[in-house]
Length: 87
Image (cartoon, rainbow, N blue to C red; front, side, top):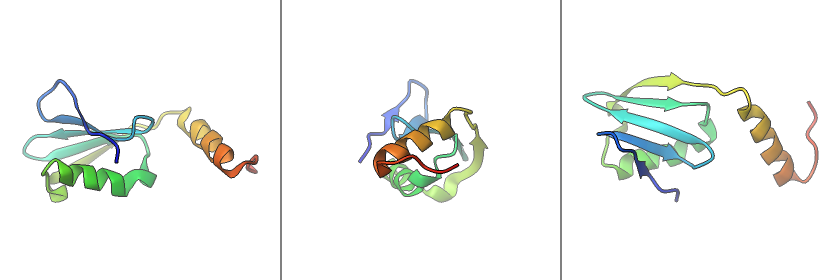
């Protein structure tokens, strides 16, 4: 399982993977800051539970898409499939 990185801020964590990070900011309510890592949803939920945080405490989601991310995903898919994908 991927490591959870505690960032140098109180109650602020890096979840997900190194290539596709998700940030969790916790106060009374939690907020996830992410850029479209839906494929890692089960991993992220497990990481939140490992921190002892009930997923129900997370009330907010901030999406931060990155323009080059689809290109990286496509390249990874093509590499894993061993062929070029159709557009």
